[in-house]
Image 1 (cartoon, protein in one colour):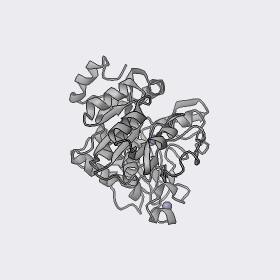
Image 2: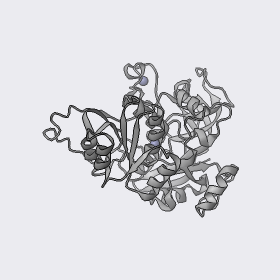
Image 3: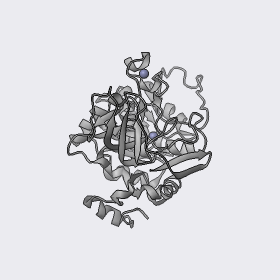
Image 4: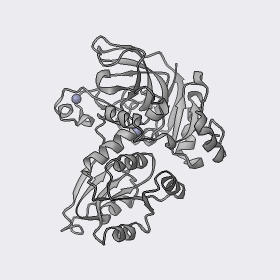
Length: 369
Ligand SMILES: [Zn+2]
Ligand SMILES: [Zn+2]
């Protein structure tokens, strides 16, 4: 089978690999029906994920159909359509029992798929701890609707949850990239008084205006002023930092009112400065990433109920055999790409009828060239 393989820093190649086998009684083999490319894959490509092992198949965002299961798997069966969780976790260690699955102590725990063990930008993938890490997709929910459940949507859901949002809050979200947009949808579930989204990119600000007309959209130059105006000069009650740029961390704590919660979802390339003398008296609470992705059942239910819809984030579709073109488009942020859905070659590069109009408006064909 074809698998996009991490060869060395700066080099991913589509190689031929053997079909994965069940190696532990808790494993399942999943036929990948749709996968996606995440900015964390680019971090691996650039050599900035030290735990990533050369030779592994990359990709950790995927949905599929269970092909086979080990003897100790009870919650899914061959033929089930499933969302795969980015984090595989044992469910039994100190951290898992408290819901902190990102810190699972098992060697296959945490972010293993597509980093330390073979991931999903391929045809079949072995998923450890299948009972914990595969969630059946409800009937009526498409692969494209479910695609982001296990990774960026899990991140947005977790971020909104730990930020302790109430209906009287003004919530500032910094960054409207794919994870910021998922965070926005999950924050909306709490019905805060105002949501403000700060984003540098014009096209992404337009995307938020189009799909979330209730949200106040700003840019870094005007952000502090706009937050102040909408909060009677107090500052934002809750800030979620998803941008991870050189200046976004500082903006996050500056925009926060005294006693606010500031949640840091972003992954930075370098250390950030926490200037405690400047923030003395602000009494801030900081919460930091990464995601504890163990609420996929709830997320899929919200998708089935129509309360979360991340399909507009899929701006491009590619077959697996052309995944390297998809990477280049994603990395260079051409054509206002947000997320790319990668289909198995056997499916061709199908587009659902509703999407065709929008793609044509963007001047793209169905495969995104
Ligand atoms: Zn990811
Ligand atoms: Zn564990």
